[in-house]
Amino acid sequence: MKITVLYGTETGNAEMLAEDIASELQSEHTVECCNLCDFPPDAFKSDHLYLIVCSTYGDGELPASAQPFAEALETTAPDLSGIHFAVFGLGDSEYEETFNFGGKRMAELLAARGATQVGERAKHDASGSDMPEDIALPWAEEVIALAAEKMQETA
Ligand SMILES: Cc1cc2nc3c(=O)[nH]c(=O)nc-3n(C[C@H](O)[C@H](O)[C@H](O)COP(=O)(O)O)c2cc1C
Image (cartoon, rainbow, N blue to C red):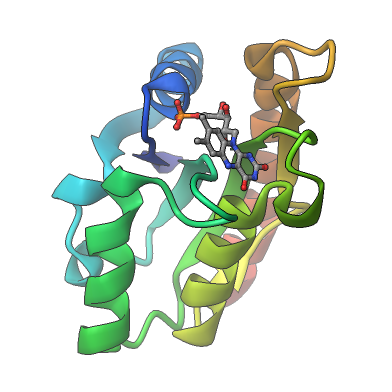
């Protein structure tokens, strides 16, 4: 499968995780990895699965590297029907009211433009005991299997 791992980060955790996911998947898939700040919303392709790794900053906001992408999505309003994505959020449950809102916001923005979300949105908790890569790799395998079915249906 063609997979693009996109990440939105403020201090690098999402970037490290995105790179880990990409390197784990590349033996079986064609994988690219890209910062959301370098990815224009008109670059989505319907034969790719997009794995979006996104942290949360401020008061439940998107991290700095995802903000230009989110603004471009809102101003250019591309039609993303036929695009499949899954979201892995990074956050910290110490921020009780806004836990993992960055990933949630990203999923809402893409769905609002017609893209199809695959699988459950994963929510890593920096205050929990799991390492992000330990939950991200099984999550990625699961969403890839689901996407393979869905993308075949819509092809
Ligand atoms: C100043 C600051 C604000 C944060 N705000 C939130 C928040 O509102 N909700 C949340 O779930 N996590 C929040 N976090 C936790 C980060 O999302 C988490 O540490 C994540 O791993 C950072 O990933 P990054 O380095 O890719 O940006 C915050 C962290 C910092 C330092």
